Length: 198
Image 1 (tube, rainbow, N blue to C red):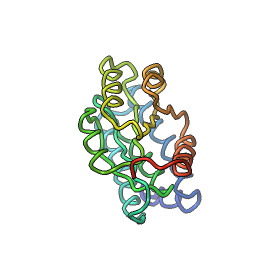
Image 2: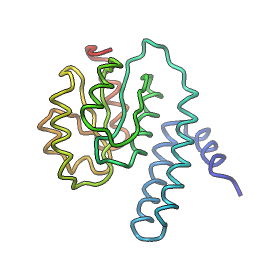
Image 3: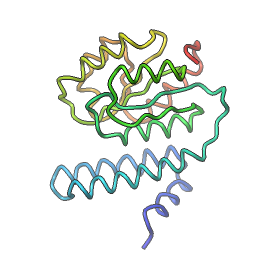
């Protein structure tokens, strides 16, 4: 029987990096989450599976060397969003699209995100919002983030629960990305458009 890493490596060879993410990892993560919610997996099993997938992504990201002149993208999840696999997948897609990625992990308050954004002179900010879809604190965090972040830096938001905050995202002028394929398209549009921040 093949180990997880060998299966993923074969998937990468057959489908390419973006194909592996879209056709294998995202459906697998969805199935893991559904199984956990249905009580078919324990929290420990769910955490172990996602940690193994995250490690695999991280190893492959390190092998993608980009020039220092590539635009910079900061990827994280806002405060209260503890699930970071969406952010890890976004980081991988961005590197594959030619962006230098500053990956900060999960659940950062607005002030820390802005501090990292300014320090690293980013071109754009990508946020992943997976769970929960009803956090009463998150709209305030998003508004504060937009208020503190330099106006020229666009905010890209995706993830399973992102649409639940659509009203706030529209209010702050964020780009709500629905579907995995929307993210690389938006990154390409930003690269082709006027520079701002890098």
